[in-house]
Image (cartoon, rainbow, N blue to C red; front, side, top):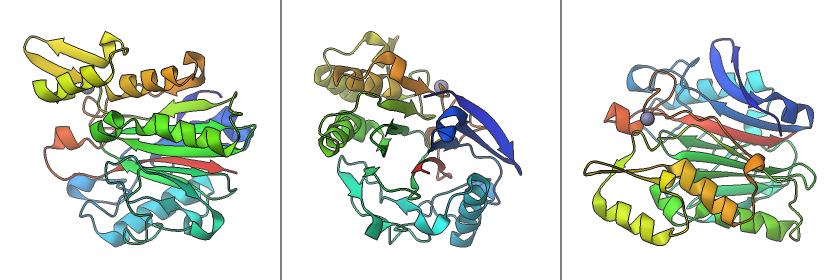
Length: 271
Ligand SMILES: [Zn+2]
């Protein structure tokens, strides 16, 4: 694994691991910049689900996929229901959700594939994107983890399903965390905060922050420590580090916008 670096092509700004691309795997996290959507969806909204005009979303997706040199007709998306179901995407399912929300894989928040040229994408505004890759085993996964998915340990479940797929041979696993709302901004009520602390007693204090009588969660840190407990080493996890609410100029943030907004994407593909 290498490093996520910012690239700008035709106005589209996104983060990419160049070294990994040379090894035949694409990991990308988009920003909100470079698309044609208007208003609260300005500009690179990539989700059909949020009330933006469908045609604009398709044009945004086309532009991004042209830049990345990926086949849009093969793009596979999930419904994203804040659950913990992990789905293995096989060749026959390629293209589900590429051009409409209705055709996306229903009831799913994590997808795994071993297929080449089958890009998987999920869409986010504050929830945490997690991408997992084993280059030796040629298996990749993408996860959507908001507080519900994080509480249900969807990223650890995805890792366990990947291990099952490759008979436990995942030594070179690399994990990438995209932009999400962090402990600086993600305020929750005391009850939810207490539930999290109870659920994850071994997690460090950096996951659950108290400031005065206010409570905050750091979704990335919680997922990071859950994966660490599953045996993933610290050196095999890379993070963009951005808080979506702090960087609302660069990212869509549901909390920050206080209304419907667009969604950036995480994309993973075996080339
Ligand atoms: Zn913040």
